Image 1 (tube, rainbow, N blue to C red):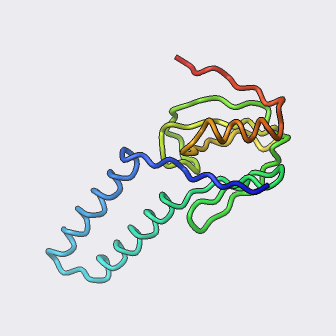
Image 2 (tube, rainbow, N blue to C red):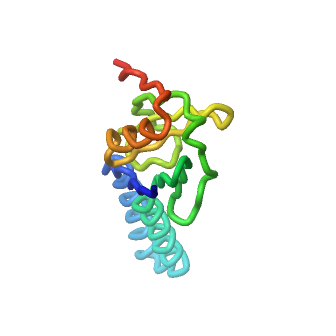
Amino acid sequence: MHQVFKSKVDAIIVWPVIIILTLVFVIMAFDAVWPGMIFLLLLGAFILHAFYNITYSVIDHQLLIKTGFFKYGEIDIHQIRYIEYTRTGYSSPAASLDRINLQCGKKGTITISPENKEAFIQLLLSIHPEIVIKPVKK
């Protein structure tokens, strides 16, 4: 079994980055700071690539998380104790504030934001039915 889920991407996370980089780029353009402008274009491309290429792959009983060019370690799905819904803004491999926390035993908690959370959770439960789904905090 091999299934890939893309991260949901929220404008509230992407647009501030785009706006800031664009403003700095325009300021540099007025002063003709070409090396800085080229750096900002490359930085912007790298950041957007990372935002739009976050994937969560389920291969057999392993969860692989990839952000742009970077890979996180493998998570054994049988080590996931519980899943809880969250909207935290902590740094994580998630491009949306519509997130879920996976409590993974010794590896701790990882926060992700699959586009189709329910299908993702159902797939994890089909592999490891003992995962507890915590109710949404109000």
